[in-house]
Length: 127
Image (cartoon, rainbow, N blue to C red; front, side, top):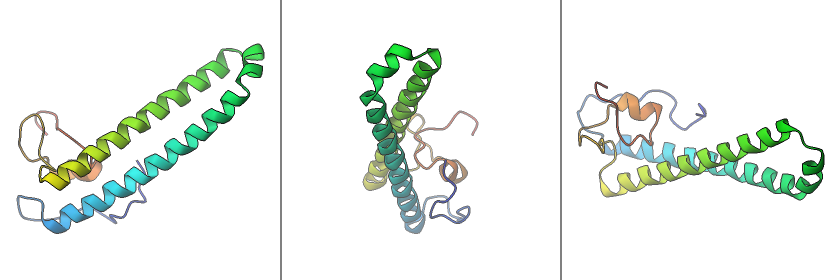
């Protein structure tokens, strides 16, 4: 996770629900995180295209290390795609008024959990 997000520090509020100001700050953070992940995915995609352009040559001389590197890049690309989807889902939950509610239990997700990962859908029991 990139620590250079638009929230300079922890969010503090004494009320039990997320205020409009908090929701707007989470919306800004989610948008920022989505842009970061999209940029990283775009870079990986460009690198993948470059590698595929020379893949026929590499296949002739490649050892297991080259194949492992390509596999790791594919895994990273898939993880970024999932992260972007999770962020978009969180933005949707913001829009429909269900942001910060555990999808398993229906209880509020603690603010410190949302601060650490604002696209969190559910929390582990006992959190």
